[in-house]
Length: 381
Image (cartoon, rainbow, N blue to C red; front, top):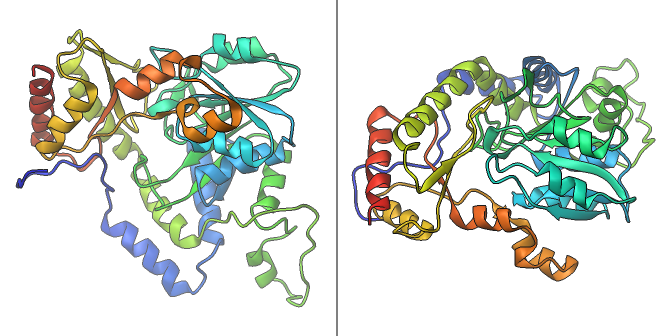
């Protein structure tokens, strides 16, 4: 980047004094690991999305892995996954020993294509992971229609906190959902994730498995009148616990959740109002979108290539990123599973032509004007 007094970041964390005060209160309490603050955060996040159970974890990735494990996904099973996603969506399937069946996505929504799901179904299909890309929900009804009632849908809702689908919240559309609280997301806990589900059996199993498989939590043992009793471990588990330090940050963010979502929507609307008339650009639908990211796709016929546009903006101190990977084009998945570049052509095109513009609640109006001015100028080159 050239020396410039203005640097517009792709993402930035909106923190207020309340967040710092809540974190200090946890530090002062002496109880830093998973405890009462984590329970409060779980309950509030689940309530906000209309789910019965929230199980906080170390990340969206560990949440997805736990869901698959709780569903009994095993070696030899197949799980259908969209190719256009972050690599973790496929990695968690491999980590269970199952086979990720990568399929193409819809060119308008960027979400998993129900038609591609239907074509990929086999006797070994045990689940479908539906990613809600950038905060826009996949077509869950159509996916359920093509797979039937016996195959569960898992929501990869990493980007979808606050998103809506036909009047229902993301996180309540499948058997279980995994959310991310990475700093680029609408609310953050630094790192962290959560499972939402209405399924009591999945919730109970996930709570044990995130804590090494212990039948009771460390907090419950600490408060017991018989502290010498060690827990039994009826299942094999993992260390996927969120800390109360992280949960304290998340609670403060949740107190401002509606304001944070509104701020993102306002910036997305400004981008759309300024850019939607341009023939060389396409955008996701807006219904129910929570706008974790604002991603547009550049037509290959554009005067300047996608990479050229990104370089033009970089030189003017505007940070951008491609949307997602096309997972089927990544070395590990090509080498191990034999995927070829043209297996998922829409995912490939989106990977090569998508651009995420800066979107966060610390952007000023002049920042947005600066991004738009330079983005439009880049398209003219």
